[in-house]
Amino acid sequence: MSRNIILATVSAPTNIAVIKYWGKASVEYNTPINSSLSVTLEQADLRAVTTVAASPGFIKDRLWLNGEEEENAATSKRFRSCVDGVKALARDKVDASGAVLATKADLQQWKVHVSSYNTFPTAAGLASSAAGYAALVAALSELMGAIEEYPGQLTTLARQGSGSACRSLYGGLVAWRMGSAAADWTDSIGQQVAPESHWPDLRALICVVSDQKKDTSSTAGMGTAVATSKLLKYRAESVVPQRMKEMESSILARDFSTFGKLTMQDSNQFHATCLDSYPPIFYMNDISRSIIRLITVYNAFYSPDGTSLRAAYTFDAGPNAVVYCLEEHATELAALMLHYFPAPPDMPKYMNNTSFYSTCREFELDTKLIQACDATGRTPKANDVKQMYYTRSGPGPQVLDALKDGTLDPTTGLNTYIPPQK
Ligand code: DP6
Image (cartoon, rainbow, N blue to C red; front, side, top):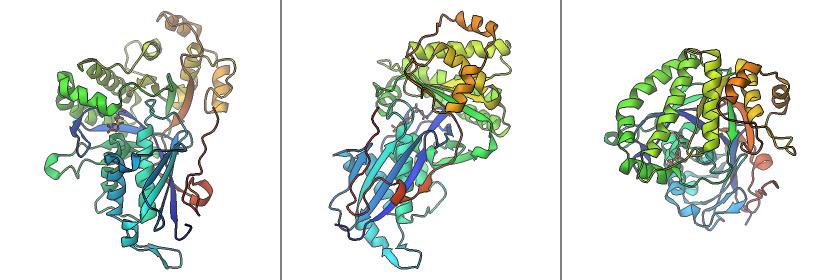
């Protein structure tokens, strides 16, 4: 079966929204009721790595996620939209000497094998579907030499895999413009607002509150919210349009206080629409709320009038907190979180970045700050936070070496990925 297998491997980042996408305008096209904006995170810390292969010898499309074959996934609407969408943009594949490896017609006809893995918990509210579908579209485009007919066309394909994935095709700070039914949603696209180099001292501290799969999927939660929440409709029509403008201006001006305030307000409002859904949906838990209280007190301690913020929390469709800050306050912020959410005794890799972790553990927190934070009722306790990631904004998808970094066997096209033991 080794005849003519072509391969490509790509890694893609996650992104964490500061203006949330919540609610679909068109389920068919997977388009949103409001525009959104996110920070693309550094792939060295969190990423999806996807290998795709095409061959005349393959008898059907196959997909492996984190080493396990997903029997029906290859026929799902999400997967098909990405594969068939990229195939439509395929071009003849030539090698370095100009010899044709596969014609456009071959590529459109051949079946594909896909193997993808994440370096972080799947479906725990860490945007694994965003990284996964962005990696799928980017890997297929690389394999098939796809070229966009207009800027953002590939993001419309990733969007059909998972809405938030359209923002992971670019680095830095990325908007998803909601688009319109009038344009057949071809204008519902991801668009870079600023590259990662624009705000080099922006940091994110991710507190993994739970690494379990979430109860209500985003898709189901959005469905209930659109059908029942009047607050969601008000948010989409009367709040987000202005907030998007203010958020973009704050990013262009690198104004952390405005960026942070809008981020927290938007997270709060998104979770308010979940509570306003009928029946209500709860994504945050008591630990999430204790993190909100600590960040609120931390900001007020240094800026009682709230004009100069040091940290900004945001929560997606799960209990994990992502706290944005600037590098100058990152050590203190992480030290504060480590004080209240210490590592369990047997966990040396509690934080992904070991040198930052030891710097934080040596940091002496102001005793008055601790007193103020103690007043929230939180007492230091291990295991409420399972793990922390310290990261920054990073680039969009990266092409890797399919033979060295890939997870499909180049002679059989079968999965080779084995998940690491926990
Ligand atoms: C809360 O992109 O996962 O993270 O389009 O149904 O796959 P589907 O939803 P998905 O929803 C993400 C929701 C969010 C907010 C955001 O990332 O903007």
